[in-house]
Length: 467
Image 1: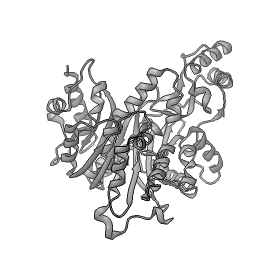
Image 2: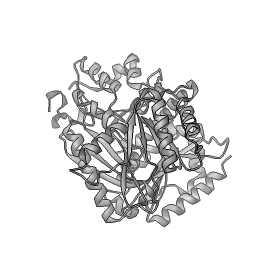
Image 3: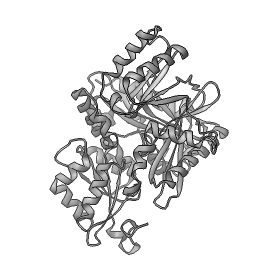
Image 4: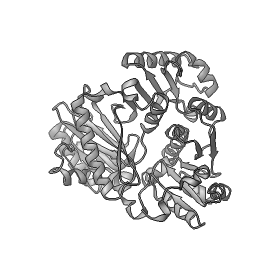
C-alpha cells in the first residue's frame, strides 16, 4: 500500500473526517448519456438525485460525516435520521450546479471544493468514500491531491486497477469471468447466452432464440434499475421469424445505448419463487488490505419486468444448503476481484430456476440498493440481525395518485407503524426527497416474517388513505 493511501494515524483520529459523495448517476453515466429522449434522461438524473438522502443510511456508523449530495436534504429528514441513529456530527454540502456528474460539480463549485480542502485540517489528510468509484470520483481525488492533501480511499481500487469497477460490474464482464472459472467453481453458472455488438445482429439472434425457446432476455452492458433490460415472454412477440426480428429491432432502436454498448442475449429462465423469492443475492466488501468480508444474504424483490424494488433479509430467506452455496460462490468471485485490485462493496445477483439450478445474473461493484438496509439493520438491531429480525425494504413504493405529503405529515400519518426502539419493530422512512415524485422508500423490521408482513400491510393500508 502506498503512503498516500495509508489510514490516518491514531494520534490524529480526532481530526479525521469521513467525506461521502453520493454519486449514483456517475455509476452509470455513459448509459445515462446514451438515453435518447432528453426528458427520460432528465428524469433518470433527477430520480438518482432524489435517492441521495437514502444514502445517509449507508453511513449510519460514521461519527463525524460530511455528506455531499447532488440535491439539498430536507432539514426535518436530517433530524429524523440523526435522532434514529444518535448521530451528532453531520454536515451536508450541495454543489450549486446539478449536472448528474457530482464530482465534477464539486470541483467546479469553488466554495464546496475549498470546504473539502479545509476539512483536511492541519494534518492534510482526508478519508473519501462514495456510492461508486467512477472516473469522475478518481479525477476529484487527484484534484485534491494536487492541493497537497493525502486522500485515503478505503472503498476504492487504485487508479491503475479502476478498470475492475466497470469490467466486473458489467453484464459482459461477469459473463467472461464465469466462462473462465467453470473448472475452478462449478457452481458459478450463468444462463446460456452470448455477447453481441450491434442491434441488427442482436435482433436476428434474439428472434431466433425467442421462437425456438418461447422467450429471450436482452441486456445492455450496464443498465440501471431495470432500464436496459428487455424480458420477452411467450405472447410478447410474433412467432414469424421476420416479424419477430423487426419487432425486436424496433424496440432496440428506441434508445441509443443498445447500439452504443455490447448486448448480452440470454435464455429466459423459468423462475422458482420458492427459492429465495426466486432472486437470491449476497453482498460482500473487499477491504483495502484485500480481505473479503461477508455482509449479508437476502432475497431480491423484483417486478415482472426485472425492476429491482427492495430486499428481504433473514436467515430463513433461504435454507442452509443454498446459503452455503451462494456464499462460497460469492467468496470465490470476490477472490478474483481482489486479485485484480478491486476494492469496495460488491454483490452477486442470482436467479433460481425451476430446473434446480442457480444462475448468476450480474454483479454490482459498488454500494447497492440493499446496502442501506444492511447498515440500518446492523445499527438498529445489532450484528445478529440475520437471526434477530425479519427485514423488508421497498425503494419505490407508489403513493396514491396526487399524494405528495411532507415528511412531517407522513411521519404523523404512519405513527402507528413507525419503528420502535424498544420493541425493535416497525417502519423506517429511508428518503424524504422521493416523496416529491410520489414514491416512498422504506425499511420494515419485524420479529419474524409474519410480523414484518403484517406491519408492511398495515402501512400500505394507511398509505392508501393519503390524499
